[in-house]
Image (cartoon, rainbow, N blue to C red; front, side, top):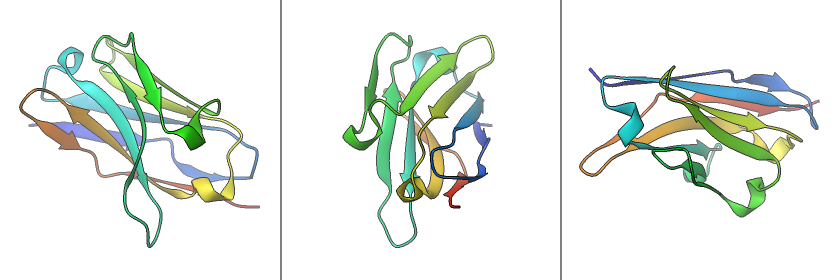
Length: 116
């Protein structure tokens, strides 16, 4: 059974930091590109960042460059999203995504709220 379980969300003040985690199971983690997406109320889901299956390549949406860092730990089958300098507009549900040649899986999401 495939599972992507996000954690680490919460309430943080503007300028603060959070680290999201996504624990993966039920598929070959080392073969999947892993991504984070987010969806704010009333908005479509938007792509945040992707890390290649080996971890050697990362890509970010322009508004996240320099503030967010995606990484993965193959020993723990976990992908992370370190978020710094958070802004109120970063408030959203953050989703973990795994994509391989013939599959795509989604987690249930974790809420991030940036507010004073």
